[in-house]
Length: 424
Ligand code: DSN
Image 1 (spheres, rainbow, N blue to C red):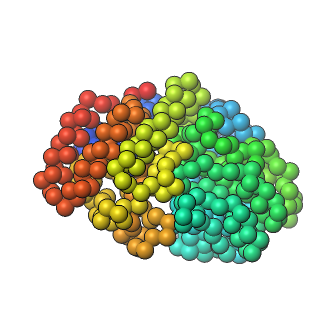
Image 2: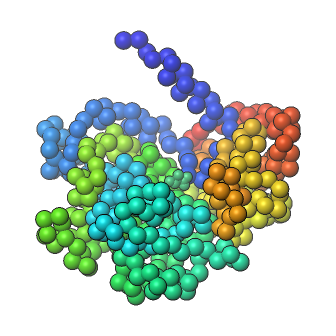
């Protein structure tokens, strides 16, 4: 069979695009070669519905061993008593948790998407807002921060069955102890979706939700730097505090409910090649070099945030504790959409983003979101991120000047030309 040049040429074009540009999308990263090798391995050929030791297919002995390694590594990484590495994505991990813990029509309370939450935390366009009754909390307009007294009041008004903490565009740490006390006070279960900061949480750089939240979900490809995928964990296999039942009416442990909700509840065959790549990434994250990487991600974010503030950019909450920042561009006379397009022409890959209390639509937006995880993987340090902020400022000041944007793009390509995607 001839090699599929059409697709492999496109893969090479994407490789070149990633190498020449400055990747600042907060949810992206560059996986190591061994993570990608595991993902492209023969495990892609194997069906393995079920769990290690209890599969619905023959020939699963090697898959079982590999999936158990993934489970042991991730439990050691997060200090978790329970993990399920099969969710195909963060969205399916969240869907499985809702299926396990809630009845259709149950009340959920999440972080408002336009304030930094996520689609799967109750958005009306998502399953979570269609099959459940959502309500939302947000940040304070004056500070850009979560106000836990207000969340408490909102929870008392709404009496949700499940509270979701965690966000995709919130640059500050989260008080999980306070969230648990709010959940307990209204009889709700508490789930943390740590998809964005999971790498920083794994290494103890941010607050740990596992001892406090009933369930924790995450993706594996953001700060965790693995393959695209999802993960569900519990710090402790809670003894089913609300007597939740299986469809057949049996009271089960939380872990049994969650496993059943992933398979057969929401998924069929697990992506064992992706699980192998997750195992490799968890192994990398257990190494000292990943600790250094995570500390550098945070230092870089602080350096870049400071550089933007010095250049009169309005950062929501004034700065960052993690790997990302949300910038309101209204004082700069450019929308998020125009900024994304112009910065793209200048060699920066970013995404437009709603800011809290935005007066523009999600297709236009007033802001942009930036993260440091990917460029830190390429080996950039604090001084480099100050240079990135300076070059972005120049591009934004000249956002309508095609020639200026082209000049900046050449400078970016020249700067990045000798930098590997994965430098650790
Ligand atoms: N799309 C992801 C992000 O960019 O944050 C969340 O799913």
